[in-house]
Image 1 (cartoon, rainbow, N blue to C red):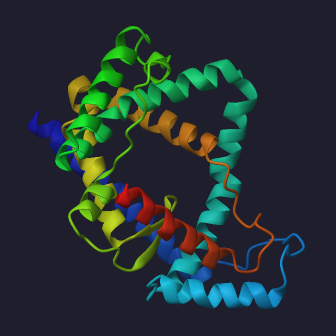
Image 2: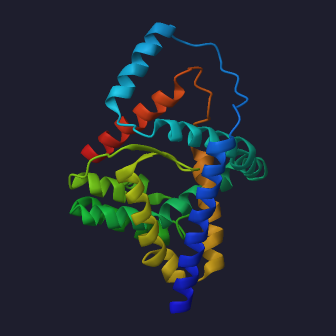
Image 3: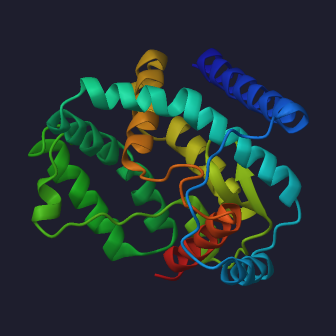
Amino acid sequence: MKCRVNDKMRGTLFFLVLVAVLVLSGCSTTPKPDIQLDPPKHRAEDLLKDSVEYAVDVYDPIEGLNRRIYTFNYYFDKYLYLPVVNTYEFITPNYVEKRVSNFVDNVFEFNNFTNNLLQLKLKRTGITVGRFLVNSTIGIAGLWDPATGWGLRHQNEDFGQTLGHYGAGNGPYIVLPIFGPSNLRDTAGLVGDTVGFNYVGPPAWVNDDTTTIVFTGVSAVDKRHRAPFRYYRSGSPFEYEMVRMLYSKKRELEIAK
């Protein structure tokens, strides 16, 4: 078992080093993206005014690096991520796509349970346990979601929200490679959720690396499939500022609920 954990840790370190190399190479050689903006939907002076307000509202001391990673994410999304997602959507019936999404959500109820419990939100914790039990049994391993129809709705929480619940501030704004908008607190939360999920959650219960890798790939494709956002489709020359502001406001609301 000790050898298996060391293998996982070495694999995690290798992935982080690979991402760092990609980012650094992107920062030094990234060409100007081949982007064709749609006609602006608002007056330029209004957008400029808004962009200044966004810059004041969100602390972004490494904006230059963040913008380069944002561009890297555009190329990764366009030439790798979206082609895989589009192929998945083309060959998979909508009915099957929904079953996959339900299954992925059911597995990740572990994170919702853990973070609701850490925040001492006992009612929400109980609802999450109820959802998992109902969907894992009557819903056949989570492929269906009868719990929502019975009034047991998703109680989404992550470790970034848990840190915010106990007073941790946003910290500087960060654009993560592949993952996109974040901040220092939410990046720490992402690491915490990932470590907890892999070493205490379902992957540890299954204890099979192949199954874990397959699930990770399926959940990544499913997540992008469900996300409507597309880089440089806003029609605004200030898309970076808009995304930065919207992400920060969204997280404030999620933590405050």
